[in-house]
Length: 295
Image (cartoon, rainbow, N blue to C red; front, side):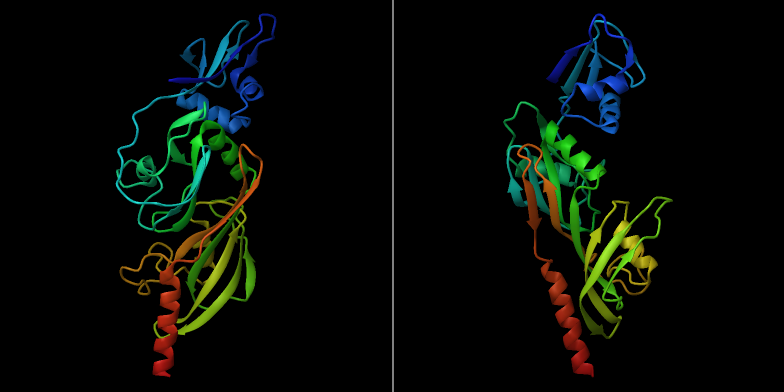
């Protein structure tokens, strides 16, 4: 267990709930949601013991923020494409077919153990961990935290919707040139903006379109649900796609291609982008050629 920060509650201070007081003293966790999670994980101690968020602090109580030393994930041998790395965080190009995390062996959490350098900062995490997630079959840019501060800071940026994300997808059909989808998902607001980059005729699917997508919210399966609901499912989507129109062994044609956010330490605005996967262009070219030959 690594001690990150310690604070003594004043001997003349009035009692206050741990949940209300902790955000005022721990710079690494400034949000109440983050504090609640840290207390639940046992990372905030009172007098050396785990506590609960509704505990009323008493004069001279000692409050500590710790980084628990748990057993590291078993490394999964896979060479990652690391786009950026420093002592605070890393950006990787997640391959399709590997889950971000989970209670099994083949995950990004297991892969990063051997692919990233250890942080030398005082609040370094025991091992790097993903801050957000991409579906198993979705490829693209993923942020990995290497310090406690980076994890909390970027988590807050996600909560405040300060992180801009861009995706590219191939969908079945021909949507309008650009548009906005704002149907609710699980009774929560969900907004996706899109624009069509190109459309090709397809013998099997009538037409396929390459879209640039900008999710303004982050609901589970948001892009897949939204595009399916308006009649243009993502190619290869076995859950929300059209039955009989799934390409065998081709996977899901959805990729996270752009990320813009503020560096948790320097405050500098970071911009990351990657090209769309080669399989996207290959498929569109093949479909166009096959159509032209037949017609």
